[in-house]
Amino acid sequence: MLAKAVLIIDKRIEQSTRYKRILENIDITVFTSADFALSLKIINDFEPDLILISDSIDFDIKKAIEQIRVLTYNIRPAIIALSKSNHIQDKIELLDLGADDFLSEPINTEEFKARINAHLRRSLENNFVENTMLFDSKVSYKMIKRELNSAQEWAIMLIDIDNLEFYKEIYGELAADKLLQTYSAIIKSSLEKGDYIGQFGKDDFIVITNPEKAEKIANYLVYAFETVVSKFYSKSDAKRGFMFMHGDEEAENKVNLVSTSIGVITNQYKKYSDIKQIISSLISTHKLAKYKTGSAYVVERPKISADNAVEEKEKNNNILIAEPDEALSILLEATARLQGYNVKVVNEFDEIYDAITQYNPAVIILDAGNSETLKGLEVCRKLKFELQNVKSNIIFTTTLHDKEMVLNAGADLYLPKPYELSVIFGWIKKFNDNYNE
Image (cartoon, rainbow, N blue to C red):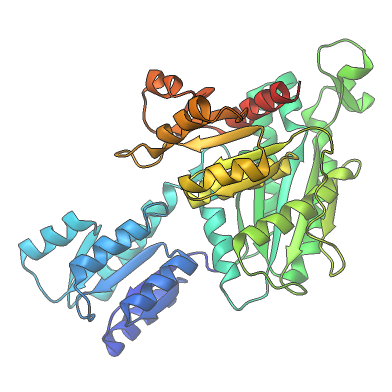
């Protein structure tokens, strides 16, 4: 498991080998490269948490740092420049260009380790979910991507608590958080050193382990969850085996107690070519577990198809996502599929028009785009005021805090970033229902 990963970009074989040995001795996975073009591929494939770059490479280190910072805008690794120079102006220039630190060589080994650990610690601390103290979805996405590009066998588990939103509505936010924290502690207790646990969404967990352990872990979690879950209910609800949403006894208001569903996929029998394929298979397998009554798990077998999503034949459940942030777009796509929507993702604004013609989405999630050009606003205006056949509801997401401008462009909803997944999917459901009335 590539829990902490560092890339060393250094033409000097002896020096980079020394740094690599120091870091591996403190349980850090290290990639080395003497070539800047190869370094960019490693960054794209493995998204290292920290990058050490020496001015010994056959590339201008200033331009290299600028390019790395642009390439890693969403994942934001720490960048440390290495140089024999001790001139203050050299340090200032590189720090201004995007480096987080500057180390003048030769470097004391203990100081080197301390600085690396300090940067890694700060990086990781910024990616914890407060109530569970687990890594957030961005880190989970990164870990899945690393496994995809590694040569190891792996198993990935998608774990969630069914009916948690109903439980939260009846018992309150604090009780739901306590349930989530307890389950995360149970999951942690089932794992060993080298396994990864993080969150996939607000209430979902991702576990990465090896294929031999995955089914045993899933079996234990189902047993452990069912053992403790009754403690989170009143005696009457626990005895009855279900809840009433409004406190009466009408059948349509009956809600099942929470349960856990777990989907497990591995690369033992099926080779994956990209992360979207992994997420699709994971969600499809997890969905099979959700179809079962009570807590259950499903392990993807060689004969199980990854494309077994249930389709609504009459209702339009199509969603179009135009989101340039790759990690966020995959998270939105995965969560939407988990909730039964059919999803199309586009990466360029110019692709939206063809996608609408071919896909006929009920809801469009449209990002504003670059803060200077605001291409998304132009697209929104065209969809709402020029193309008369577009009936889709548009959820406009943006860091631009100008509600009037966005709504005047024709958006049905202005949703400033950052937002909670529960918020955007509440609006998706509302707009999807309205579209199909």
